[in-house]
Length: 96
Image (cartoon, rainbow, N blue to C red; front, side, top):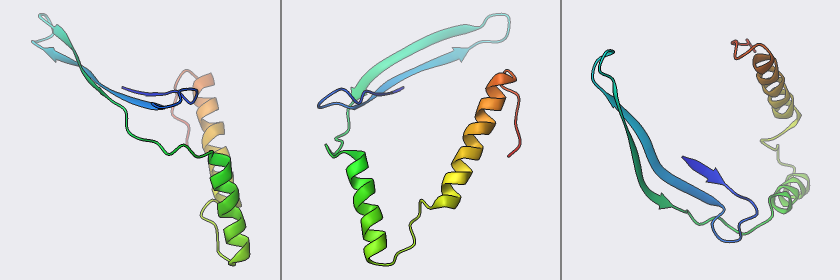
């Protein structure tokens, strides 16, 4: 399980070792829950918008093609719209 808390100063991401294991057949189904360690990887304390703005300026100043151009933005909007339609249809698969 992964938890992201942007308001946390030090441990923004926490990864928990949790799981469920089942054993037995259909008539004797046994479920056991596993709860283990928590790991908090180090995350740079830099504002994401600042990094994105610096990348944008670098692309303009050095005549680079950005990886996150308008085409990528259009694809992301299509994915979000398909996800919304799927949710409205109770999880039905929506073709892109």
